[in-house]
Length: 372
Image (cartoon, rainbow, N blue to C red; front, side):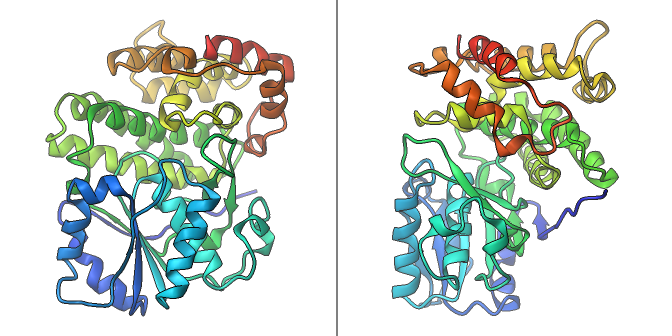
């Protein structure tokens, strides 16, 4: 069975942000709500975007998105949207911002709290507000995906939205907006993009275009992430990572897998999601190599593995080069009930199209290694 990959209309290049006024008009958005966060206000990125719509007095800004998207953040944003009588959303930021904006696009024309729609794709209809996504990190791929992770609060495991109706209509991917991203976030978000490409490729989904995009995304991460971390002003590397993130977002349409099941089960302490998934990747790849060796070998080839080097070895070595901690405990994770986390991982919705569903015991073994 072939699975749908739905593309937004994409602008990807330096200066792409100049397309914003045209796209607002094309979608019929006359009073947009820009959803962003304080970090992007302080570093001047919001100002650069507002410069493209200079002279308009119908732009509303919500800049209180939390570091991890929460129900409370969504409620504050939709309150502003309704109070200001907005008719469309512009998401300016990383995954937290874009995921919050996706929740706003749903609530704009759907009754009730956002919890009525989390984990219930069939109740989300076409009656959503239009959304333009402008990513400022090269990692989550939310600008092209059909999902949005929302946490009950900053220290709870996430649930989320899933529907082809919440794929942004437009993705404006301007690498210029990522030049100020610090090295540790460049590393974490870039490896997040790699995880989407890796797990999307491994899924059972039958979509040759999607598989090709996933492998191409892997190659672009490997070719550019060390350069971008070392020199944030490397424009070619920044553009390559932004392309990889977009391809990763498209790969998510095919599904994810155990890496994200583990990251969600341990995602209750506010740690950076990208760091968590890349720490989890080697253990999962080693398990998958026993069950889908041909697919894992194809990933190893795309990763540029040397003779005798596995896909897991390459990811592990790349993490070390980027200064990413080897375990969650070294990252600051305070531990938890591994039995509970293994149970939670084993029943995760992320395993729906995994080529192999690890047992609770296998998750416990991997978690012991990953947490450290």
